[in-house]
Amino acid sequence: MSKGTYRKMTLVFLMAAVLIASSTVRLQGIASTTDAFQSPIVTPEPSTTPAPLSTAETQIALDYIAARESVPVEHLLVVNQHRREYDVLGKTFWYVKALDRKSRLFYTALVDLTDQAPAELQDVEQTNERALETRYGKLEAQLYEVLQTKGPDDELTVAAWFTPVDSEAILAQLRAKYPQVSLELPERPWVAVQDRSLSAKVEADYFQLLQEAHLAKQEDLARSLQAQGYTVRLHRGIPSLVAKLPKSAILEIAQRADVTGLYLIEGKLNLLLDKAIPTARGNVVWQRGIDGAAERIAIVEPGEVNLFHFQIDVKERRWAAGQIDHTHWFTGQGLQHPCRRRYR
Image 1 (cartoon, rainbow, N blue to C red):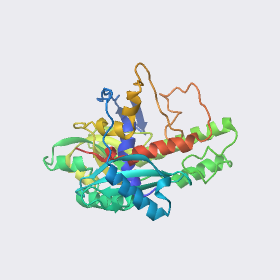
Image 2 (image 1 turned 60 degrees about the vertical axis):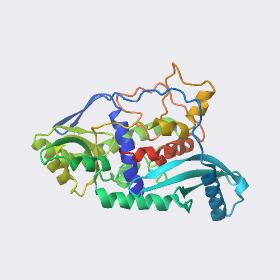
Image 3 (image 1 turned 60 degrees about the horizontal axis):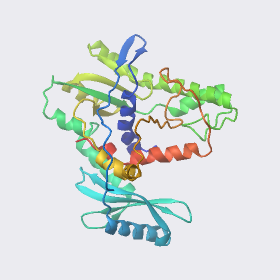
Image 4 (image 1 turned 180 degrees about the horizontal axis):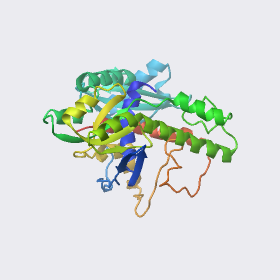
């Protein structure tokens, strides 16, 4: 996983972490509580009209993809399109994702809404990442701006995100116990195990080792902050801890080699469902009379959610061909959406 992709995923995982109900984590004498999270997001009213599309820019993107990939433009089917704003670059693009009906491959392109020039998504994302690092360092943009108004002793609740755990070491421990584990699937080593009961044991042990590795990442900083009298919240599932700290301590932590980012946890939420819902074509479904009233639905991606967590009671597991490929594609779209990088 690239550094850019890793940093982009941090906010997504932090949001997932706070959704876990109240629990206590103990790290060799350090007690830490994670409070229950009540979502402030209200279910929106069904939209009566779809979001307007940018036909001209969409055609520019399709022509660009066709020329780049040497495929007939009539073979391309648009499956996703929306505006993408890169505030730090001062640019806004029109994003287009298209399916080649013949090869079944997906292609993407951006179109600059200022001069209608096509651009590569990866190039723009990398440029944006470098600009963010140059301007804010390890601080999330909103945290950086808020700190400019604070004194050295003013406190804020922040999350520290650590360097990745050693996945190769975890796999080595797992394979020492289960030789059937495949090294070709490092993030889901149990998938290649044919025996389902054994596969479930491998999965449970994998997440146990992963949790231990995450807590180990947090241990040094947690002990240091605890010794200074600060209350620390630890996370089993991700390499991150949360604490209310003065500005001086936050800036000091940003210098640590084992910390890759610091994020503001408190503050005003800026709802973006007006953009996310049309992007996912939710309004189209609503127009057909399907609004989800009185229904509760959870989409749980295999391998990304620890089904062995003590607060999760799994009633049934169904195995379906292609399930993992589809859910990974679904999650990938969420990570690519510009809403995940909106701080204000």
